[in-house]
Image (cartoon, rainbow, N blue to C red):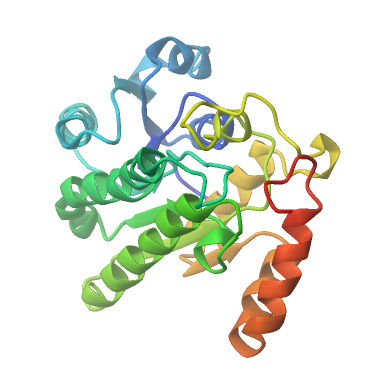
Length: 268
């Protein structure tokens, strides 16, 4: 995995998987542009690394002009873009019958439109470098998860967008990869939105059963180096995708009963 002097953009880089990705690529001698709303937290991420190797850009992926600014600032400092990792994301936990529609719009704005905006402005530079576009997604982009309608919808949309882009650019050397971690010990679990749009503030998941952000970052970097089409990071995830192709009704029931067992599950 030689990323020496490669220019890598990571969105949602202030915590969790994004923080782990930024630090991993810095350790691999890449030049990294970090993008998130919290400039102070990103400052902590890059502590100890030479200033000529990183760029911090504060902004919001839901704002088209902020995403354009990110790309322009990266090219201005580093002269090119080799990898764009669309990592910024938000989750939810509520039944559709109960949820405020603004919650679904928020998830689409962050998870889908954030990916679209950054990819649109970075695409000319990535085509020039024959680089990589990565969407950090979830099994929720392959299989609907009850209690997470907005999350699944946004990830399905991300998959459709990236898979179509891959086909459009088939003859132009662009690498497009969808990365699907398992449940990960990151901030997204605590900021997941409830039915009224407030953060849940706690998580029903057991910490010891989760992937670490560092494990996820390593698998993503390895997938980029090998120019993989997709990286599904857990056995459970791979089985869900495989069985869903042949036994969709069975998988629906399996997923329902699995999600129902979560502490304080909205499923009754």
